Length: 555
Image 1 (cartoon, rainbow, N blue to C red):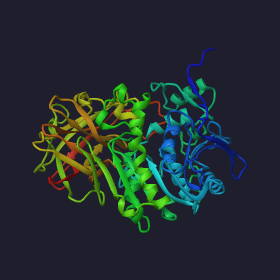
Image 2 (cartoon, rainbow, N blue to C red):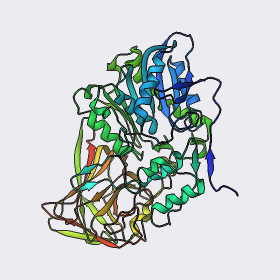
Image 3 (spheres, rainbow, N blue to C red):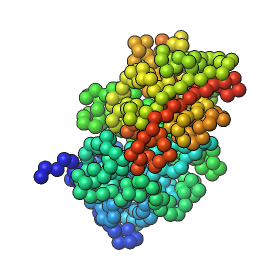
C-alpha cells in the first residue's frame, strides 16, 4: 500500500564537520557536529541545539558554520534528544534543561574550547537557549534567541478578562515534527469533527502518535520544562532578542524582551534587533517572494540572506564572548522601519515615539460599507453587531503562517464579509511611522458564554489592495460589556506611505491557524455540536473603542 505521507530523514554530515555522540547524564547520546576555526587554538564555542536535522538544508548550518568559524568561533550543532541521529525518547520541550547543561559541560572539556560558550538559533532552538540559561551553567555567557520565546510551549496569558486564543499551529507542529526521530509531512483534513479527529486521522495514516500532542489535547498536561526554575528568575546574562515584525511569534517574542528590559539585573544586558521578516526569514522588501529571492530553494538568495541573519549575532558575541569589542559599540536597539530602512536607538520604543489614538466610529455601517478610524472619539453611544457562525469561518490568510511574507496576500476581500467589522482611516498625506506597540481597546458583548476576537491592522493602498501590518487576538471570558478590554496586537516598525490608509478588521474566527469556537461552553477539541452567536461592539463617551498606535513624530 502506498503511503500518503512524506518522511523526512537525515541528510549526510558535511565534510567540514566532525560528528560526536555526546553522552548525557542518563546515558543517552546526542549527535553533535563540531566545526572548528583555522589555527587550532582554543576558541569560544557557539552551541545550537535543534530538532530539525542538524545537517538539513532547511537549517543551513553548514553555511552558517563557515561564517562563524571564519570569525574565529567553534560552532557546535546538535540534534536534540529523540530527533534524527540522537538517542532517547521523542517528546520535545521536556529534558532540554539538563541536556543543555550537559552539552555545555562536554564542550568546555574539549581541547578546542577555551571554556566560554554562547548559544544561537531560531524558534525551538531559541527555546533550547532559554532552557540552558535555566540550567545555570556558568560557562554560558550570552545567547541570541531568534523568532522565539522562553514560553514556547505556551503558558496561560491572561490580561484582565482576555486570554490567548488556543493556537492550532502548535498541535499541527507537534503532529508533524514530534512523532519520532523523523519529520512527517501530510496535509491535515480540517473538515473532520470533532477537532481531535483531524489529528487522529493523521496518526492513523502515519501509524504512530506524537507524545507531545497527547500531552496537550484535549486536556493539557503541564510538562516538566524548566526543572531548575524559569530562566527569567535565574542569573542574568546578555541576550540579543532577534524579533521579526511579521513573525507568527512576534507578540510573545516582544513580551520576553519587554519583560527583561524592565527587570533589575537583566535590563542592562538586554539588546534588541528587530527586522521586517517572518519566521522563515523572508523580508518585506522582497514580498511576495519571487523565486530568485527564495532562500529556501535558491543558494544565491540564501547567501544574501545569511549576512543579515548572522551579522548581529557575530557582533554581539565579539563583545560578550571574545571581548574584542566594547559594549558601547553595540546599539541597544537596532530596528527596521518597513518601507524605509534600518535605525538604531537607545531604547524601545525609540525616543520621540508617542501614542496616537484612532477611534472606531460609524459603527452602524461597519458591517456593510465600513466604519471609520477617526481622529476624534464619537460624542454619543454607538454599537455594531457581527454574526459568528462556527460552520462558516473566516479562513486564515495563508496556509503556512511561518512563511507569511512568502505569499504576503492581499486581504481586501475579507472586509466584504458580513461577519467582519471593518474600519478605515483617511489616506495619509505624509508618512506615518509606527514604532512600538499597537493595542485595541473595545467593549464587546456576546450571546455565547465567551467570544473570540481577532483584530488585524492592514495597509490599504490606493489601488484597494490591503496587506497586514500587525494582528492580535483574544478570548473574552467576560462578555457582559461591563468594561473595555485590551487586545494586544504586538509591536512593529512600519511606514504607512502617503496615499495609503489604515484598515482594521474585527472578526471571531481565523481558522485553522487558531481554534474554532463552538459557540457553546463545550471543550472545543471535543465539541460536535455548534451554535451561532452574535457579538456586539459598543463605543460610548466614557469608554470609546480605539486603536492605540505608537508613532514617531516627523523629524
